[in-house]
Image (tube, rainbow, N blue to C red):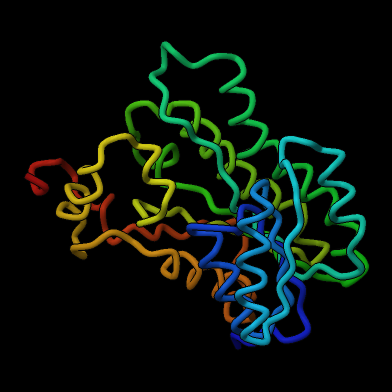
Length: 253
C-alpha cells in the first residue's frame, strides 16, 4: 500500500529539512520525484546523491513567488500523481517590524503558491482521473502561536482553510487534499528562531521527549498519499510529539 512505483511526485522546497525527508521517502518507495527548489545547487546535490542509489530524482529551479514559473514547470510534465507543497518562508520578525515586502513574500510562497500549483496541476489530475495534493502546514497559526511569526502563522491558518475548501471542490475530480501540521522539527530552518539553546529547551517540553525528525513528517505524507488514506480528504494530521496537548505550560516547567 506504500508502493509508489510508476507515480510522479513533485515536492516544493525539497532540497533540505522536511522537504528532503519527503523526497527521500517517496523515492525510496519507487516514485519518480521532482525537487522544486529555489536553492538549485542543493537540490541538484540531493538528486545526484539519490540517483547513485538508483532512485529517479531530478531537481528543478523555481521561485514559488513567480506564478508564471509555476505554470511553466508543471506545464512541462506529462504526469503528476502527488503534489506536495512543502516550501515555506518565515523570517523571524516582530510584528511591529514586519514590512510589506516580508508579508508579501510570506503570503506568496506559503499560501498563494498553493493556489497556483493546484490550478496548474488540475489538467493533469483531470486527465488521470485522480490526484493527491498534500501541504506542509504547521501547528503555528492553526493551533498555537510563536513570537515573531505572526506573518507565518497567518499564512498557515490560510493554508488550512485552503485544504478544507479545495478538498470539497476537487473531490468530484477524484482529487484528495490533505496536510500535515508539524511541531518543532530538527532541521536547519530552526536556525531562523535565533536562540541556539531554544531547540533543547523545546525538546525537554515535548511529551515524547524529543524534537521531530523530517522522517516523522514524511511518514504522515506517505500515508496521506497512499491508498491507505483513500477515504481521507480535507484533513490535517498534527505531528508534534504531543507538544500541543498540555492545557497549560505548567506541565512543561
